[in-house]
Length: 355
Image 1 (cartoon, one colour):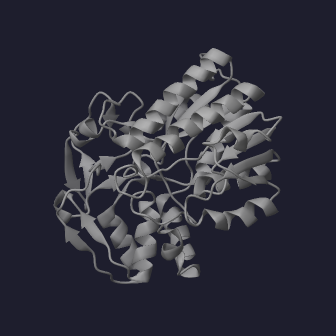
Image 2 (tube, one colour):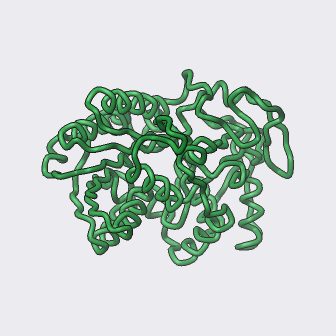
Image 3 (cartoon, one colour):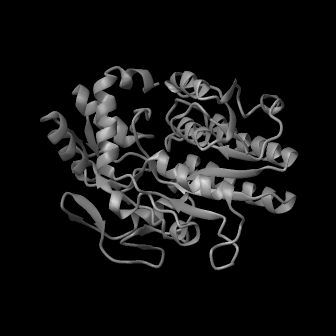
């Protein structure tokens, strides 16, 4: 099959490209290098045989030369929850990247009769509803204090509220999901939407609003300043994590099978894709891991709340397991060890990817 990947030089896009090439697929893609550090992945993917084009999915003409496509993987986005409000990019630019770029890719799918895999985010879930979940502190981390209708010990399910506010970033991805599903239904091509948790691994760009595990480990290794922001300055806030090689396993299933589940029913088009409770870790627990790996460090407390920060976000990926037979296999310990090795080998990484 011939697979097009947008954002093909990004952390996730490049890992998917390399994995799909290894699996024997023809892979092409484009990237506009808007994310500092992404240009470093260009030689890697080209040496693996990926047909790369420097282009921006916001421009229809950037996609014109790509023909004979069987699947499109939409991995291009501004993935920061602070995008549109932090002064780095405007709200209009955010929507152009994350929404209009997806529309152009859907037009490519329509033209080529290709399927789409849309990489979405856990940030589509309601901030108010997530902040209202009852949590308690256990072993240096927030844990869910009681089960709700759409959240339990395994995490937040796909039925959890997506009511506003979800941030401009979350709204752009939620709108992209709906438009992608409508295109697929109207024009008769398959669409799979994967709501991904925190993607983590070696080579991830280190910014606190996009790749907290990488940022924290690289910062600790360099003795760069770190802060527990909000939530009493305790570092109890929790996220789960997922390696892109585990995501690759699901994508391979999605592009290689028919749209019926194992019991014959139509597969759900939207699934959570995260490491779940088994991979969940608080910042305080991550600091303890870093201390064992690199020695003592100092983390300051900043009690000032930051917009869109959440105390506990863990994705329940049971639906992906039930309908695709998929489960993540790379543990948080392995992910952290991989990032730590990368931090030792690339002491300049924070500077490269901090833009």
